[in-house]
Length: 160
Image (cartoon, rainbow, N blue to C red; front, side, top):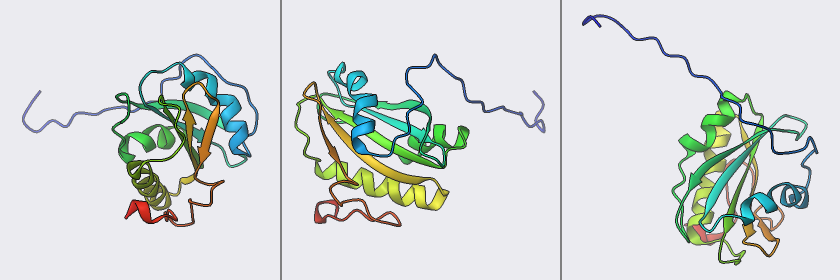
């Protein structure tokens, strides 16, 4: 390659085999039905993003991060990469707590706020962040609990 040559790259979405139905996800319970079996099999924290159409139909699911027993590395860059490539209108973030405790940690609040703010900037709304508790089938929905506000605000003092 010469000193003045500029490489051209292509960025493409690579589709994997389908896992899920075409059910519209209008409630946290619908998300739980869709994702709980998948996330209950992990012994470490896993964060996924569901990329959504404007009518709340799932375009695809992307595993963003596989962490440790009680933590995971989550950056908006990785979360929104598949959303942009999928032309998603919105996303739902989902992660598991292998301990079966549904209570969000301080870091869960911080990540949720950061994703909501970044999504607001990108025009890709964070509809919800759902924590699925191990194999119990219980969940915590930031939206349902009234913790996820508009314009990237998480309604809780824990994230400060």
